[in-house]
Image (tube, rainbow, N blue to C red):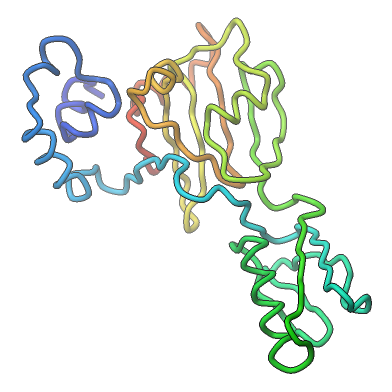
Length: 241
């Protein structure tokens, strides 16, 4: 694939965000040009591409299937217990019934349980929910990091944070060859990132989500991954494989 043609086919805003326009060329881009490119960005993305999103807003952990919750209702010991969220994303509690849990914060669960109890049984119930076991949000990290393996997320987490949890890149890492693989609605996506550009603030530090696989390329090795990086350069876009 011709790199030049591929980069020219992407909108200016994407190239600026990815740090691929520099020097005199970027100096020629005025604010109006960038604003116009940004306004058309959703329509200008390559077919099937998903933009990487930074960690923003509340970073509370969203519970999911197989997580274990400790639930305590003040003054009602019979309702205080540990529950495991089912594969379907809910759990059952006496007097409360089935509670949908997956994708919700502990604060939201506390409010719903309290509201159901107050409706029929208790006056102003005080409910506390605590995540006892984080099981649903796991990320696999492979390749040139000091500590590859499986990381359990306990809140919304960025790529730089995942690398830090893996104790950083090792000496053989290719900093512009970091790939996140992700499944969305039954389709396999991948996006490449340059950690130097992220640290410099010229590329988004993407949110990493449960079941993602992060692969850090080795310099001078892994020909198959290098072919992918050549085809899909570090543009902070998830492309369908």
